Image (cartoon, rainbow, N blue to C red):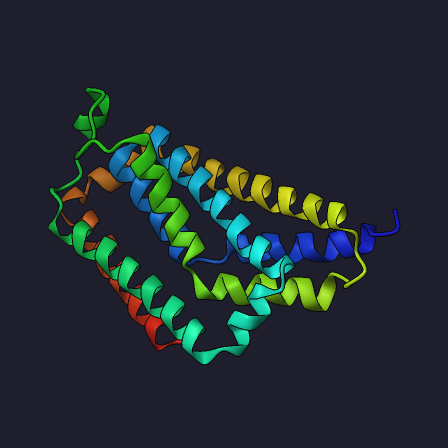
Amino acid sequence: MQYLDQFLLIAVAHIIALMSPGPDFAIILKQSITHGREKSLWTSFGISIGILVHVSYTVLGIGLIISKSIIIYTIIKYLAALYLIYLGIKALKSNSFKLDKFEKGKTQKEITKFKAFSIGFFTNALNPKATLFFLSLFTVIVDINTPLYIQGFYAIFFVISTFLWFGFLSFVLTGKKVRGFFNSFGKIFDKVIGVILIALGIKVAMSEM
């Protein structure tokens, strides 16, 4: 019970951050509609594991170094921006989404589970805003004397809650009615998502610490 208040604070902060639209949400939306539920769940898993990268280097103190080094932060920022722009360009070049491909058990272009996982992982792990978010959590809310096993519990909570949220979105977005809705303008869906991802990439590139 000693760390209950601390846990509740970081839990609320994390849940609010999860529900805020960003690169992770955009990727799940695309994966759900374009590649189906299974691949979207693997992408959700990748996003949740990507969080461990941020938690690990924050606990080790590397996150503070990153936040204080303009050069390191800038490199991470531009890598994230380039990756989002790359995904956006791929979406612009892809074929149109069609619901009948789902009903035949096929997707627009089949990807492996590992590919789906890696897309989620790198989208989250390279997000510089996530770096600053977890750094703020572990410096402002989590006391320096908090035992490592408690911090480990927080990390597990971050992973599980992230997977549950994006897993939930994956189930909702791959529902037949939702897919039917997106199918009504399937010719432009990937183009719209591509533009959004590129815009997010540019926004990340132009962001400041």
